[in-house]
Length: 164
Image (cartoon, rainbow, N blue to C red; front, side, top):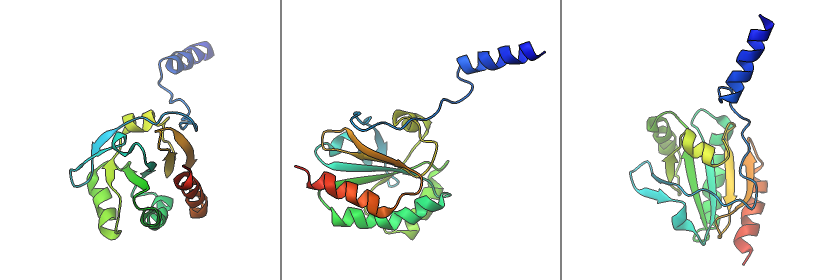
């Protein structure tokens, strides 16, 4: 019986039934391009922002640290307007939840809906929030998972924006 159980576990792991550990894209990796409509239907493409610093924020309406970071990201976008592009990627199951959050916050950056495929393209997003700072060349500069001090993100963004 134990041998059968071991064989079953081995077979399942070989065929991907157990999720692999998510490893976010490391610095220096080319960020995957994506094109999605924002919550209003306007197209948003990561490639369109090549030449700018981009901050991709994976978040969800049910994630308290995600909601707490929103005002900080809005302020960051305002501070670095024209040099920084932020895109929020909602990992909610439906756009209604993301729209409810958008109605409560004066977002000054686009929000798109994410899914498993987009998450996997960034190395797998298992914890939220997950943020990826992308350089003008389209390569990842830094990434963060979970609750992060706004100052840490702010310093990294400022350094990237000020770098020629």
